[in-house]
Length: 225
Image (cartoon, rainbow, N blue to C red; front, side):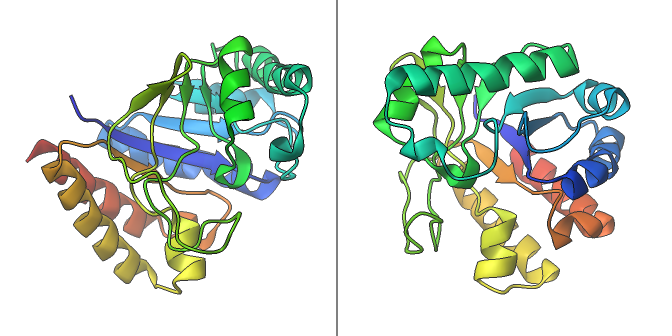
């Protein structure tokens, strides 16, 4: 059945410090979230690792958020890089890592082909639609609100606009962003699709915990309708 998936990409040490505040809101509402972390960009303490891994899903956000993944040409190098991130995160979090999201939502046939061999079962790097896709700065998306399989990997499209698109690209304020997210969620739900949200703890919206709580409550109501 269609799911409500709350996901986070942690891009910096600042974002990592804010992560547990968002998770506390989710815990109060009984929401399980997925955290995509870079394995080599910032120090991840054992305390934070234990806090995030508790009742959450840990995923890889590549070794570094440097935009170089898509430029890695050799299949063996891609597999090595992707596997290196997964195994380091599994060691840090003492948790199995099967999910991947590419920095900047980069994707290519080469990356998808390497994911399964590197030990991943799920990928969430494909946007359903973005007004200004990071690689082209023009509109782009796979236009699917449902998961599908590619070369043994389950692709879970990002169906809601990510927070960076609404707040930084479209210049919306928090209230406007929440309103649009709920409108999108209702349309996706009516199409029997997965509602997949991406909120970065690095960006301004993560500091509005009251607004974040209100957003989650509304998304839960849409999902239950």
